[in-house]
Length: 354
Image (cartoon, rainbow, N blue to C red; front, top):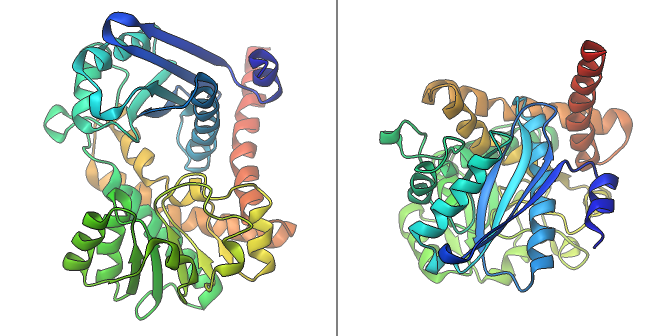
C-alpha cells in the first residue's frame, strides 16, 4: 500500500504510528475527517497477522466513524486506534502509553472503548489524556455504551418494520438474532419486552445459554441462523456476513443489526434489495453507542442521550425515503446523507475563511 497516495485518494487527514517498546505498545491511529469536529472513535486491541492488516483495519474503521458521526448529527469527525496485541495480555503500561500518544494529538482524536477494550481500560488511558470517553459513571462518564447501541438498533428495526412489514410494532414478529454478546444481549432484552419471537445463535456457547435462560429465546447452531425463517435478521456479531454466500439463504424481509461493516461489499445492499429485503445501514442503526458517548464531552445526561439515540428511528426513515426517491440502495442513501452534511459544512468553512 502506498499510504500517502491512498490517503489522498480517500480523503484521510492523518495516520500516526505509535511505538513504546518498554510498554509493549505497537499501535496505529487513523484520523479520516475532522470537518465536523474532532475525530471520535474506539480503541481496538487484537492480534493482527501483520502491520498491513492493522493499518487496513484502522483506515476502514476511521472512515466508517466519519460517516456514522455525520449521519447521527454529531459535531464529530471519524478516527480509530488499533493496538497490535493480545487483549488478554494488555497492561496498564500499554494503555497509558497509548494515552500519551492520544494526548500528543492535542484533541484531534478522542478515543473510547471498542473490541478488546473496556470501561476500565479507558480509566487507565484517562490518566494520561483528557481526550477519552467511555468512562465509568462514577468518573463522570456514561459507562458501557452497549445498552444504548442496542436501543438504537431497536429504533432502526422498528422504522424498517413500518416500511416493510406495515407496522413498527414488533409484537409477534420473528427475529433471527446473530450474536448475543454485548449489544446482542441487550437487544435480546428489548425484543423480549416488545413481545418478539427471538431465535438466536452465538459462537460462544456460554453467551448463548445465558441469553436463552434470561430471555427465553430459542437457540440454533451458528451457521443455521442464516436459514432461519423470520421477519427480521439482526446481525450483532462479525462484519462481512452479508455476502454472496449468505444473501440467498436469508428468509427475512428486513436486515437490521448492531454489527459493524455488515456488507462484504457495497453491492451486497443492491443484492438484498433485489430479493425484496430492506437493509438498515449498519452505521445508521448502531450509532446509539457513539451518540451516548458524545454526551460525555459536554457533561453526561442520560435522559438527553437516550432522546438523541431515539432519533435513529427518524434517521432510518430519511434514508429509506431517499433510497426510494433516488432509486438507490439504502446503503448508498446513507452514504449520501452523511456526505451531504460534511460537504455543506466544508463549503461553509471555505466561504467563512475566504
